[in-house]
Image (cartoon, rainbow, N blue to C red; front, side, top):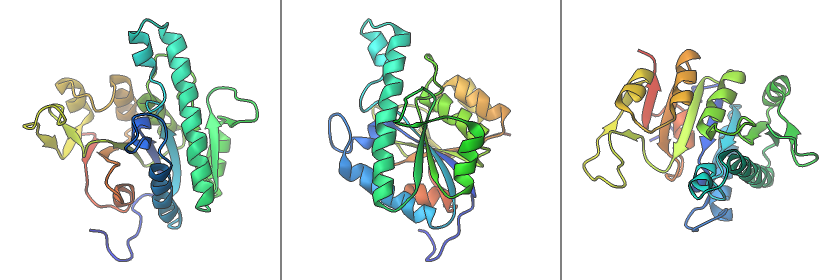
Length: 243
């Protein structure tokens, strides 16, 4: 449990949210109540002067890999997935605004008047001014996951930690949704992830995090308050870092 008046242990973080996490109990799309609950939690974190960047996946609308598996051109499918992340980012920006949290959407793809183009120096300026920055459209290139995009943006803004909020409470040796005997890891090294073939993040993202000495915390976003717990120092989920 958190203290009554806890203090954040991080000044600047990058939060990676899965697109599927925005569905709530819906089979597809965006659950307004789920997004609202997440925005409320982030508003509480924002009051503690934590600088936050966010990367949101697009799996609740369209996944490039899934499209490619159905015969679509992979590059085209990934571009569709990038557009899905922009939709999610705009929905999240709107919800944050209703909770009086200033936010900016910065896109790796040119989107005209929909979102700002991603410029690293401007993103850092937004963070320093107390604005939440939602990074959309991945890296702007096909064949890269949103995990890789989140790691890239975390390193670019010099975040102290990458918080990966998923649908499970950490990293397991097997899929806990399919195997009740799966064992959870409390702590792993980057090399452990690669050598054990764990699917917590893709190899590109892990390699980038390792090179940049960026710690990664993987935890369950479906448990209310977990994002705040992670930022305020409570040990949850699985931590991935160097030796």
